Length: 304
Image (cartoon, rainbow, N blue to C red; front, side, top):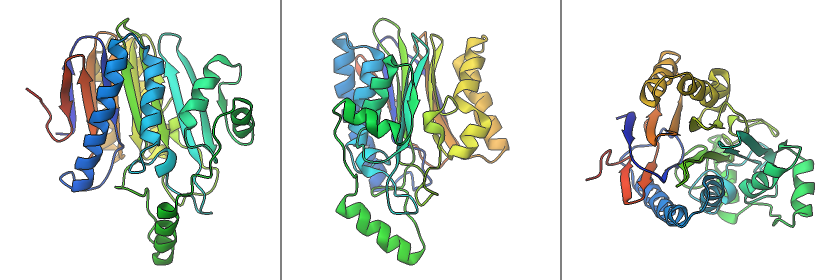
């Protein structure tokens, strides 16, 4: 099932581990889902304790970035020169405020710097400004070159078969949240497609890939150039803002992607806690988590 829709009560969180062409029944996907479910449980406990949606988005992205099986943070794909360059953005729907960093090396948690930019005049940075601000903010600086990832990249380079990540082959990760006060937020983090030209700009730092307002929060994963061309997140949010219900808005976007043979997936919530999942890829590990626990996930579309 490549589309799934429902409704629950506040608070609510959806986390995805990246749209992927991998076997949806593989062990790696099962492991990814287990990790995502654990992250969702931790985040939900904080939401139930009163933590805001935007703060919880950052917490969620940081956990994804610290897990090497995902293409973000320490698990990021390497570019053609053998270095990882990371992109992340967060958006506070209550303020309709996007901030992020694009194609930045030496940061394991770009989402933390994206958070710092929420309250600055310059909302989106790339090198060298991002690194300078990170040092100013005393955020940890790291090469992100793990031995495992470097060895795999070199082996694949010799075979002319480049990996997208160290763990299972996934794409951009992200989450959408509505908190107990009805505030929406979204977040996205990625290491890119792997072996791309240094400095490539993906969708993850733009409103095409990540958008939140008082009406809806949507984040996207997949082929960045296609996502940018389709303006996926902002376009889908506009449909909801203009009165289309979330399921119809997602279905329209999904059909457009299929008709153009585009490869991506999206997750979203609206202000009434309606939720939606749609992807054109073979797999997209996701978890939907409510105040009473797990609502749905990729392997088992309906729980209970």
